Length: 216
Image (cartoon, rainbow, N blue to C red; front, side):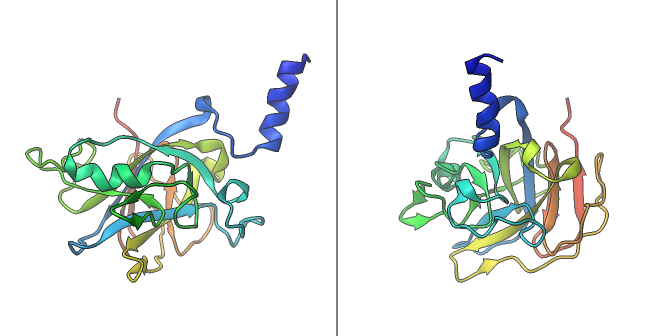
């Protein structure tokens, strides 16, 4: 094996959170949540900290439960200003708040990975094609590094509402998911269980779930 090949093989082991473009898959999270005007919704998540060691560091690049990802652009009009500001510098789905260097919006720090309020109303500036459900579906669109999730693409996710005085979403008890992919998560969790490479639909504080494949 030549020196260049050796470098990349060693890098895969020494830098476990280095993004590999060929391993990322588009992954969408929807959470139905009727918020107050002053509220914004974020998610935190990754691997279950109760099942994995090395997840207690505040330095996200060394956190074994963090999943490398990049959020995708959903719009450029005013409605998306907060989402676009907070997603800057957000490189991992993790259980912490803002990452070092992650963007802020009018002085308010990110509280995780941001979502944006969407609707299925095609006349609204908040319309998103993947939202076929109605109003109040908060959405994030990501390119996620699927090799870092659980077997069959599962990972944990939980809502976090800003301002921080609102905080964590209540625990849920998820069972089998409906949808064109659906399925049962590999372990019990008080969080939503989503699948990498799919469209995941949840309700804030609710245990029901739908997991669909992207349409061609």
